[in-house]
Image (cartoon, rainbow over all chains, first blue to last red):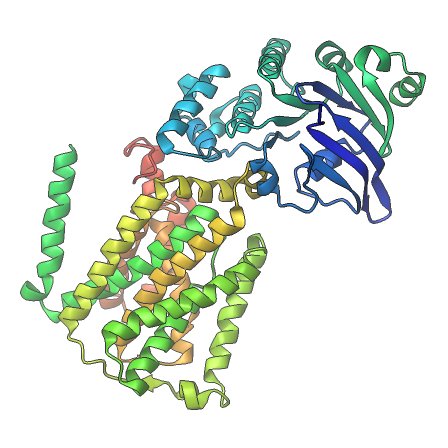
Length: 234
Length: 310
């Protein structure tokens, strides 16, 4: 099967700092992949490169076989890539319904239906006319997920979806992700909590100092000596 | 409820249309100025109120369109009805280029660059080099051959069109996208919104409406010169009016322009020497206690529903 995402020999430097150093990997459609590594390993930079917020200095990124390097963020989003941020970035002074409708594409009537469906999905439909800024932190994370799903992306990048929310909500959120995955969506998840990665991802990719240091199924990666050394400082 | 609103609008429109028949020239003049500033304020709000890009170059729209239309009337004898839209269309076209370059700059830097553009254009229009075309710093006196009543009806029509447009846009998906740009532009873009395109459309639309009002403004004054056409007051007054009425609301600018002009008029007539001091006091009070403007405050307190259509 053709990979949904292919990162090919990507380099990104910020001045002297090499954030990504000849990084290459592929993501199969329909998988959940964990992206792990210590702070500053290049995980968020990688998301910024995939979504077109940054451009690589070297190498290319392919989405469903099509080269997307150099494309604008909105063009990449319209090709089916959705992304949430580590710091929640919903639109605070807009209502929940508006937050979703604004990013939807198509007829307004259909959009309202779809938005309501997604709000029910994340159990926020009763608050549809509240401002997003009135929600709790965890609820904003759920709203942010619903918002990303609104344009029906095939590839969803989640930057620390479970961080800072209580375990119950965390379980709800992961259950939603599994449900969407079964419907055929592909996920890449950046996460510091190794339990989340091991329990919920099929594959994992480990980065350190911008280099890929390990890749494979979670059960294999868990035993990787180099990774354990880097990640846990053993 | 809906019928009552339409009935109220109809009564107000009949009243406004009949003003030149029943009231003195003083009132027609005052209303003309209110309507001109309503379009300036609503036009500013349409772009800046929704996108959050503070445009401190409103006078640039006004001045460029005012100059083009005034010169067409004064030197080429063009009929006002044609000169006005040509002035506004010219301004919109130049705004596409200006928007394309300057709308990449965010926050306070965009505001400053618009001030610089206005000041630079003012200097340019006043130079000797361009004086064969612009008459330089000495200005252009002209008579357009339009009666005060006709001019009043023209600006009334423009103000109504502007408000209908603002109403439609603010409650549309396009309006929501502009709000998303105000809230978080980068997030909006990674969610698939073509922010550059939306910003430029709103900027150019604002330029057209404000430019048209600017052309009417200088025809009304029968005179234009660079320091008058590109005056910082033409930028600041509509902004203050919008803050007064409610940024990002549909009817805030018209309420702001009306109240502001009346207060200004009363203070100026009654307390000529103190009026600037009192005016400053009122402004500070408003900004301290009603930072969202009158309509914003009423929405927050639940006096008005929290919907985008108001």
